Length: 434
Figure: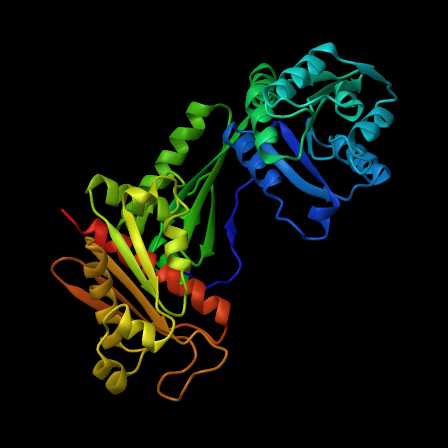
């Protein structure tokens, strides 16, 4: 749980020699908010794992002059610039032309890239058009980075001790080239240049508000040393991100371990993972290790809880099914909630939540059943049951319990906090199993 204020940080700085990386993502669809910029997130995370220092993310439209301008700006204070997008064969793919102008270069035909295109098309019995063939034209000053998943190669330039990588915007192709070619080069640059490393470790907590967590941890300056600590609240709990910069991996890992041990000594009962695993993945691991199963019955969240649980690959091993019982009729006819229960206590009540959780568990013959019933809003509240009132039930084969919450007046917040709280309750239940 969290108080949902902005993250705050404790920082002690010292002079470091970091390998600095700037990221540019290209595309009108990103700039106008039509799609989420997951490429920049993934690139930054992978580079950070190596200990590199990511300075910023920039999004530019499909505008050649704008891209050239941002390349010039980033080259002033970064060692590595990575772009993603705009390498396709259509008129709005401007990255290759922009790079050719930026490096005062010209295009040449790369035979190895063309052979890859031929092999790719042969596997699907397609003919290579002139437009497809043009993907093998690359700037002469660049090195083509193989792309076994698509027609556009990655491009690698080195100029004035600056390293430029241009990757396709298709996520699977970008990820392949980054892993296959880019990350090994960055790793070598860090080793050869004897750069300092910046590493992070994330501790996931659940079932505790951010402010209470901060009180339990106490004054960070007493134990952080040269580390940083950030509180990152979300609907699914509060993450504690420890950061450290050091001369090498061994030194940095040792310092991360020291700070982590201090924090765990204060708040271990609320910790679900120390390796950046989200709560739905941790729940899956607990269920699989105990050969246990779960089913859900949802009203106001309308399938959101089941959706989050099944985001994890392999969740079919432990998630058996769910019921969206939005109406009272569905609660009674499908989940077998007693008519008297709803008439006497209401659909949003402890008694209804208890029956929903227990009955969905029995219906799917699972080890655990979870229910959510509430008033998400913006309408439907009363003086005794205002908007934001939610009951969450959790049943195992021996017991069933229900918990009462009053969240907020915002519909989206209420639905998301209901899911986060239900996951927290299940996680705590699983952790208590001996």
